[in-house]
Amino acid sequence: MFVSENLGVNEKGHLTVGGTDTVDLAAQYGTPLYVMDEELIRKNLRSFHNSMNKYYNGMGEVHFASKAFSCLEMCRIVADEGDGLDAVSIGELYTAVKAGFPMEKVGFHGNNKTDEELRYALETGVGHIIVDNIPELHRLETIAKDMGKKPHIMFRIKPGIDAHTHKAVMTGQIDSKFGFALETGEAFEAVKEAVACENVELYGVHCHIGSQIFDIEPFEAAAKTMLGFIAKIKNELNYEIKGLNLGGGFGIKYLEKDDPQPFEVFLERVSGVVRSECEKLGIAQPRMYIEPGRSIVGSAGITLYTVGARKEIPNIRTYVSIDGGMPDNPRYILYQSEYEAVVANKADQPRDEKVTIAGRCCESGDLIGENMPLQHAESGDTLAVLATGAYNFSMAMTYNRLQRPAVVFVNKGESRIAVKRESLDDIIRNDV
Ligand SMILES: *Cc1c(COP(=O)(O)O)cnc(C)c1O
Image (cartoon, rainbow, N blue to C red; front, top):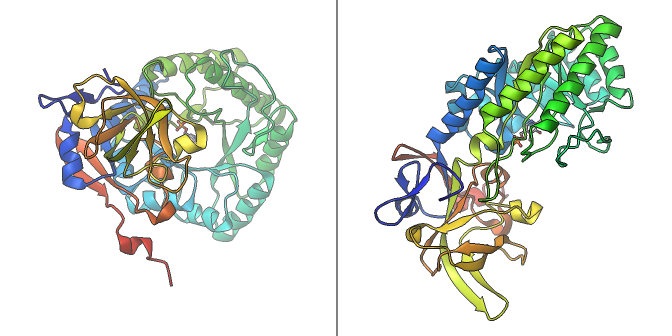
């Protein structure tokens, strides 16, 4: 009935998430409100790491991509499940440290890391630093030497896979700000340099081919390309690459028509390709890493709003205005991303109107979506936007000096605050 498996309708006709009445949540915590279902987050993590165990002999790790959704409570849940983290900034690292996260299970990314960030990563003992470019390699070497450390690094590689077509087409993805290109020989030259470095140890290679990808073929093609590169390094430099990180990017269901593959199928197929390629190429099976973000938290989250004004413009459209919008969900204005919405207190009624859901910022483009099927929404109703668990809270901003919403976790009918709603004093906290 709804895009996410954890949503339902109770006897009052109210939308439920993880067994909790969303109308009650809105009344208890206020709106706008992010609601995350802990049980589904844990289920998603388990389905990735159990499949890794089953299809790749446990020779792998699942690193949740923090950028999709990061807060102390999320780090604690990931740690509790025994999984790792991928972090892209000192802020994400700091959140993990403060949550007591085992930092040896953290990979540190970024296409332009600062010296401060590199030093912090070494100080806190992150497991791998994913190096993006040669100047960074040299800066890291200097900092590591200075601190008397020898960090494990991976290289971010552009494998030249076009993830957005149905067939895995080997096109030039050279035009990306991330990583080293394979085709030009740039990546191989970088490997040669790293192998000669005294203060870093080249442990692995990494690629991330995109996001919200439904096909498995591009991942299989990327794995093959990366293993070919590992074999070349072994044959020409007599150097063994021990880790293969295939990034994240697995698609989720935002709309009824979206049809993502189960994570198990993804891992079964990709693991199969890795094992058979290794045999063919005569190389040892690397330790495999994946970095799912959206697919762990996306479907586990919804956002609750209160409906305010309703404007019917004859023969044009109907606007339904809510007490949030682009500051808590900038994905429509950034990418015209589509979502499903439900009037939470009328969830048992058909969605027989088509409306534009508008935010409250002074921007005409501040919309959650256009042409969205919805129940008849009136002032005072609770509106739920579905599958907002990824890249909503983490992208939230304070435009128009709006306070960022609270985050509540639900679990089997219980709820608790994970991030408090910003206060007016938070808004002026750093003003002098
Ligand atoms: C964004 C990102 C991810 C996570 O992507 P999802 O689409 O959320 O799974 C993983 N790894 C890297 C390097 C990324 O940049």
